[in-house]
Length: 338
Ligand code: XIL
Image (cartoon, rainbow, N blue to C red; front, side):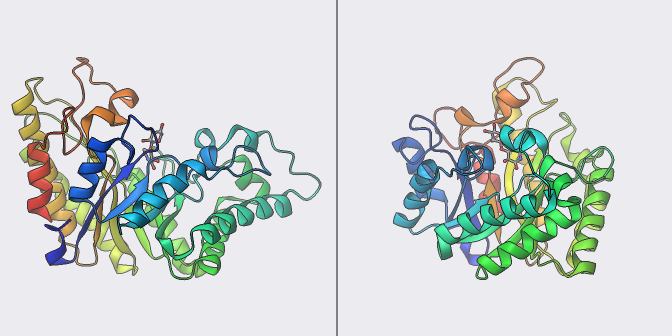
């Protein structure tokens, strides 16, 4: 973060609450957080599935430990997220919930109660929220539906209510729509869908301040230099359109899926770092972009391996530090880009 500050950028990372994992209770991971981060985000602990085990019960214990660490260390804290517009990532009980005779009223009550309970508990300690996460279907650009949004009368109405409630309950906070449309080819429908959603927010006066670029970027192979150059034009057109509507940008979940690159570690790490540097240089050229958050600092705990193993089964290397907590070329590349 000391590296990032001169141009006004701020570096940070996700962390978890698992004692032996990517958490503040793991002294080696805590040391990385202290060395690099000015802002933190909980990898899972604020999600409905974790925070709200039943409609009438909240469990803040795991997130509280993360928030307390951030406070003690004088680090800023982001909230991820207040609504994840995906059936599979919302709690099971929500899909089975009895919305009763007035489903829209009950759905609005559940959503408002959730957002007000969370934002009021943490007050000004949380300075920025991913109010809505991933509402666009990547393949089609259409809006996702859940039991909650169907009961409430549609996805747009649901997202609008989420943002309006967050603005009223946490007027100090930056309100973000967060999604993973990326710069690689194959993301055109996703980007178009996000632009339509952002246009709709503006048309309806929905209080959204920024677009969160998750930035789970993917190398295509050893030819990352030419392919990265080819992606740049489309990406700039997208970011130009977003910023022209008055949205700020931030990078919320940066990591690199090391596809196609050789198994050999030194070459792979170089390929990842070069590719990341190009992505960051283009994206950070947008002046309002301040926060750059990695989705974990250390390969040992990254979600990418379990989520999408490399076809050759070689351990993934998506993060700035390797499994032994040693900095990789990606770490230097980020520092130089900031
Ligand atoms: C991931 C976590 O890293 C995993 O531990 C969990 O099992 C699933 O969620 N986009 C997001 C994040 O917005 O919340 C996701 O985090 C990664 C993709």
